[in-house]
Image (cartoon, rainbow, N blue to C red; front, top):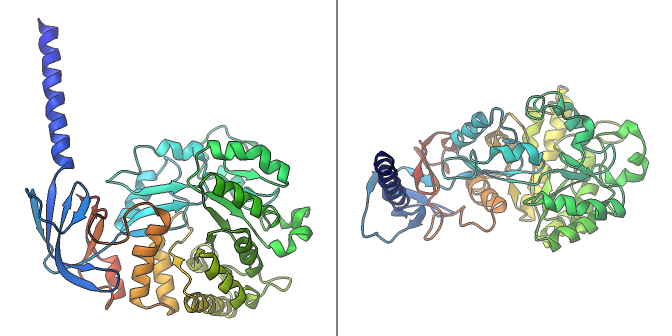
Length: 425
């Protein structure tokens, strides 16, 4: 009889747990007396969250009432270009860092599927960040990021992928595509990894022939621009967008002509300062920006790399690079081209980029807020109802103590974080 009693107890406990789970999923909250961002201004109103969705219609039952006391409510932020979290080691640290900064959505444009698969259960649920991965990017022999991953194999990946060698990286961290035949042969393997999008690399493509077989340019070259249209065509046939790393205005134009929809880095995020590549070389022509507008493409500038990873110690050169960055962003703004927020730094978040962009003085507080909380999240997850606080959208938002349209630093003083109706902290 004892086994039977034990079985009955297990069944009863299971049913109770299921009831608790259903109750938690159906919990409703009345978010009272908030000042909610409508995409242009703050409106004093009330919302309800029901099963993780926002509504203005009062539900039949309210479980909790939260008085926001006039505080300012905005959509959560996005990070359009970063490479963490990507390994199990320290993943919890990175996740908490993003959530602390109000960043719920992340786009990782190059990673190793073997390591990111081990993050299952840690990400992409209501109490963590949501991340999409491109898996290994497409480049040429000696091209970026081949050298970078060899370095990472000796540092952050040392414990995450023990036993891997440099030869292990090709086909995982990146794919070497030198010819159309390479693309045909490797494309099935690229798709087999189920990437959320495709990442391609163009670096100084105006000198592709010069750099192609010269090892002195290793790490400073990428795909043949002639192969990029075929990559974009194959990606679109598979229902995937293409993000492209660019360095120069020529790279940008070649990427746009190939049909790329997302640009990783804007020219001027770094300056080589040799062989004619001074700061002025990276100024984006209006003709290229008009093409970008026609193509409906967007870009993440990652200009904050100037103060994190690519620091220029020469004050004159620093000033010249900064001036080109300002002019490029002014031209982007003039042509109404969307800019997404990203820092491309393993140990930083997009907050760094926002602070840097604010310091450049190109955008208003309203423009920066929309860039970070509306444009960037919707680029990362275009099929989801996020980025706006309105009927039928996900009940994900940040509550601020002060009005960020009047005080930019208010974006970094978060009172509450709510994701899909769940209070994080």
